[in-house]
Image 1 (cartoon, rainbow, N blue to C red):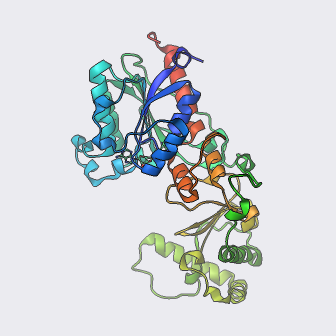
Image 2: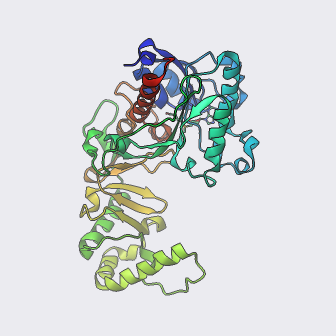
Image 3: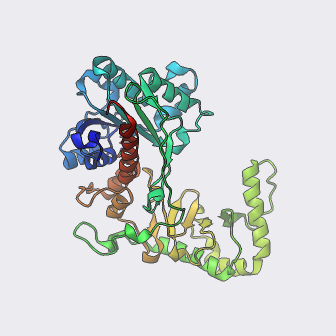
Length: 406
Ligand SMILES: C[S@@+](CC[C@H](N)C(=O)[O-])C[C@H]1O[C@@H](n2cnc3c(N)ncnc32)[C@H](O)[C@@H]1O
């Protein structure tokens, strides 16, 4: 352990959520001196776990309220940079939630030199947003405050580290330039895709907290999945289906020339697919009452399994607005706040909040919100604890190992 971690350090947790950063920093011997979280139920979960009352709306915060700290952590909401206003000039970061980070940093840099390290997290697409201009604005705003900032955010995902969740995120690393002025060059070794073990996060027994029967798919869902499973079985498809199946389009012939190209492309593929498998598909449709009872979105099917499995019930399933999606059972799709909670096909049930916690590497003693819907949402919003801990540990080791001021 390097000196920085050994000595202990103070950090702030902005846009704290349920404390993915908090968990990671605690494991590295950090002490949280301030947190901010606007959502009341989320702040309550934070309090129950860490006994810290988070300040509510960061935009209303006077930065002098925040104590001195060594590390500033923030998983700022994506809203911050997707605002139309952010596309004009450099100063337009004003009025975004990202600007609140700058505002706070500015004050602390003026008063005591500012935190030594900054650690920010956001969605992957931050890197390319607005032809990379957004990232450049963020980078320049931090450089202006005296930070040495990584050239391009580090892209990391739990599955790089063997945790079965595919969730690529951008992590921004900065260190005061007077502590370290060389290029920030961190190397993350990735495990190969589809090499994780799904069983590592599954708790397939009843616990005091969660009875598995409460997470079973309902009758309708079971019927829809059986229908799509039969589709796969009856068709005995041994080709890879590289496009979404839109069953309602199979036998339609209306003109599609005015549609956007991507849509024409999908529809044509579906029409051709139907021609090829017409006999089998007609039989299947008849068997399922011509799918009249199926909701429109569930007549769409995304079989994204790379020929690795042969049954829907071997996969990880999501009911999404774009259709019923099935993936091979190596990685769970990213948990997101707007929930399409993953279903474990072989158990015919949704993952439990405890399993969602495992996917985000929250420890066993974490007190999960009792409201199941909120719990999923909170984990969907969080950062993966192991990912953040590993990245920050590597970063600090890299800096402290070389810094003459360490
Ligand atoms: C992407 S999540 C970050 C989650 C966190 N990193 C975690 O591990 O749980 C962003 C959080 O910022 C909070 N937030 C949004 N606007 C805010 C504001 N004005 N002041 C404080 N928190 C805010 C949201 O409620 C949400 O929990």
